[in-house]
Amino acid sequence: MENLINKINNFFSNFEALASLLFRFVIAIAFLIHGLNKFPLPPQGLIEYFDLSPVLASFVAISEVSAGVALIVGGFIKNPYGNLITRLAGFTIFIMMINIFAIAHSDWFITTKLFTSEQIFLFIGGLYFLIKGNRS
Image (cartoon, rainbow, N blue to C red; front, side, top):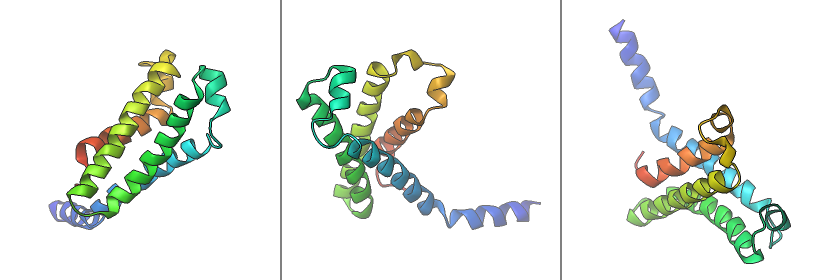
């Protein structure tokens, strides 16, 4: 039995870097899609629904796209700068998701709606890359 467990562990250890890469791309693409859906600038939906100024609404859209791009680019730069870019992207996502929870979904705190939404996974993804950087 122990031999089987070791074989399974050895098999999946070959895919550890791939798992981080897939997670990176999924979080980045989600942010790119959310941000690009707010174009052209200024995003009227944010202005009307949340009563944001055109400048703030545009900043939100640009930040979402920038965080997605930075998360992808940071993963391909294998030096301290890539690590910093990844952490900055994670920080941006983390801060944006906190604000999204506080402003757009304040009624979700500690409910099943929170834990069944994609937003909790984006939040955790941002926190993951903020803490972990490029280390796989």
